[in-house]
Amino acid sequence: MIVSSGAWMASAHGWSKAQSIRAKRMRDRRDCTGLLASRGAWARSRQARLSNASKACILAYDACFALQPGSQGVFHFCKMDIGWDDLRLFLDVARLGGLSAATRTTRLSAATLGRRVTALEKQIGEPLFVRQQTGYQLTPVGEELLRRAEEVEAAMQSLTRWREGSLPDRIVRVSAGPWTSAFVSAHIGEIWTVDDGIRVELVTTTDRVDIGRRAADIGIRSERPTEQWLASRLSGKVAHAIYSGRHLINGIAAGLFVGVTGEGANIASARWLQAHHGDRIAVRGNNTHSVRELVAAGAGLSVFPCFVGDSDPRLVRVAHPIPELETDQWIVTHHEERHAPPVRKVADRIATLMRAHQPLFRGETPIR
Image: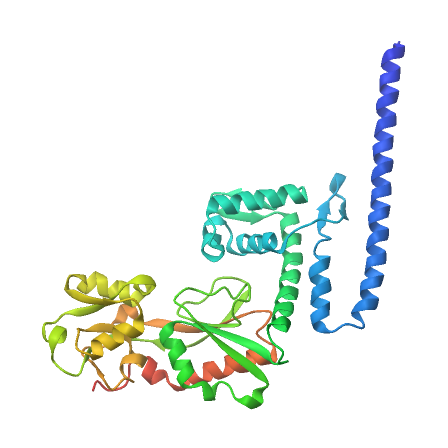
């Protein structure tokens, strides 16, 4: 076969260029390997002398050295400026399985989340998710990034807790709805004492607090969590019934009801009241406690958890508990934190408190 000199020279030039690229890649990998070796030795030496809070700082800083796929399936490390905010968004999408679910925890639109995820994928150089009609599924690279991002998350949480106060006591955050938070507050002596060496924060909200992102350590919920990173135990049942004030006056005498507006309108009991007696709601309050005060003052009837209505001497139950409003009560923790002594101690005491008052929660006390 006869090859022209021009073709031969082009082939030789292509071969030489390919060799040059391969040699550069080998040098880059040796440089990165040496960088990691020196950083690893430095980190091991430093971490032997640092406090836990400082270790958290190092781990969070080392997150910038993220896994990046190389050519031909070879993975190597190189320095990347991945922000913590981007990792938090990635964690939400990965854990919740899609953009729509993550909009509720991030408070960003699906379009914005999609752009942020795509930008992160471009930065890393590989897809992190397989987009499907049923949601987002992690790729192998996405699974690796999830593991590393969770390590950074734990480090950042440790750093935050260290920074939040001068006291060395661990803060245990307990999230619950308004009525349950009020019940826990009234029985705080059964959950926490000064001698425990911990501090307790109550996070009261009608929204679901994200335990996965450590916005709370313990959650008291009406539904069993489905997230694989959360652990739960059933503490009992909660019944609801219709209550009125003790005096047959004003709206009560007219058979009218007091409803809920605002965020509280989304809870199951408020939706039930709207569906069954919406045409007879004459007065509304924008939170559950104001509704109770209105009912006690004679503005009308309303629905309350039995542990609330039966324990308030100003109210009287006018009917048996409503079957379709009975809910479970779950004590929820992060599976990595459930065995931590401070979290376990508070969670155990809350579970014991709820079980001890089950007759009240289930509406089994006599109608007064």
